[in-house]
Length: 253
Image (cartoon, rainbow, N blue to C red; front, side, top):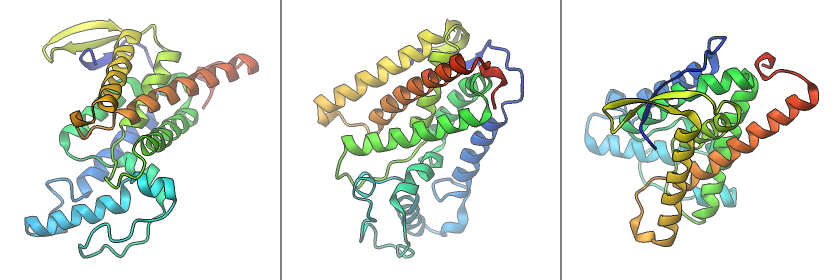
C-alpha cells in the first residue's frame, strides 16, 4: 500500500457503532487468546502455551482441507484438549477474529478504523456488517480453493477488511485520505489511489507467489484479493438496489 492511512476527510453523520464494535471484538478476542502475552492462564511455561496455541488455532481458525471437505481433521494435534468437535464452515467466521500477533492485529485495525466508518455511513449499519462478514467468508473459501488440501490454519480479518476497501472504492472513492508515506511523511492522497494501490500490490504478490512458490511468506494474499473483489461487487449491488428503490444509501440501516 502507498502508506499507513491516518484519517479520511468524509464527514460521517453518525457514530460508526458497527466498526467500533468490530474493532473491540477483534482486540478482545486477541487479548483473551493464548496468542497474546497477557493470557497467562493458558499455562505457566512455554510448552504448555505452545500446546494451548495449537489447540486454539486448530479449533477456531479456518483450515482449507476442512473447509473443502466439510469434515474435521483427525489428529491435527496431540496436545491436551484436542478432543474438541469443530464445524468447519463456522471457522470461516471465527477465523476473522483471530490474529497471530500485535502487529497483525494493529495493521488490520488501522485500516478498519479509517475506512470502516465511511463505508458504514454510506451503506448503513446492517448492510455494512453483512458485507464485512460475507466478504470475509468468501475470501476464506477462495483461499481454501487456491490452497486445496492445506492443513495450515488461516486466521485474520484481512479478507473482510479487504472487502471494506473494495466497497470504499465504489461508494466513496472521491475522499482524500491523510497517509503516512514511508511511515514518516503525512500526505493527503485520493482514496481511490490508496485502495487501488493496495489491490494492485496484493494481486502482484498473489500472482508472484503462485508463479514462484518458493517465495511464500505466510501471508494469505489470495484472501486479500478475493475479499477486495467481493467488496467491490457488494458495493455495486447495493448501489444498484439504491438506484432501483430511489433510497439514499445514507438513510439505509
